[in-house]
Image 1 (cartoon, rainbow, N blue to C red):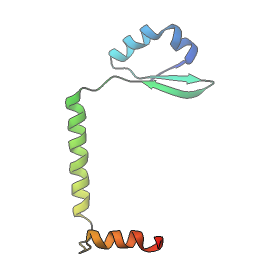
Image 2 (tube, rainbow, N blue to C red):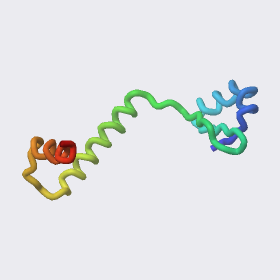
Image 3 (tube, helix red, strand yellow):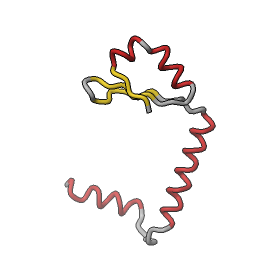
Image 4 (cartoon, rainbow, N blue to C red):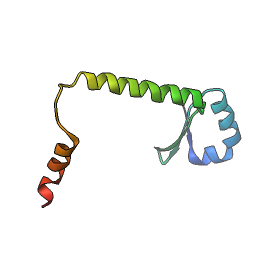
Length: 84
């Protein structure tokens, strides 16, 4: 990952964009602290794939939880219990 100061990024923005197009990530700093990161964009197919993958992992995780017969109404009652 390439790191550049904000003042340098301002003067070399076009060059930095070219680096990002080639797949490099650029970290922009101000006074030594990261304030921004330029990274290659992802196409919509990759985003959808990652979202679907995350949902599948979540569903698999839910299957590992103990079974309960709690209703939505009970959960809402518990939530509202201290609000009276």
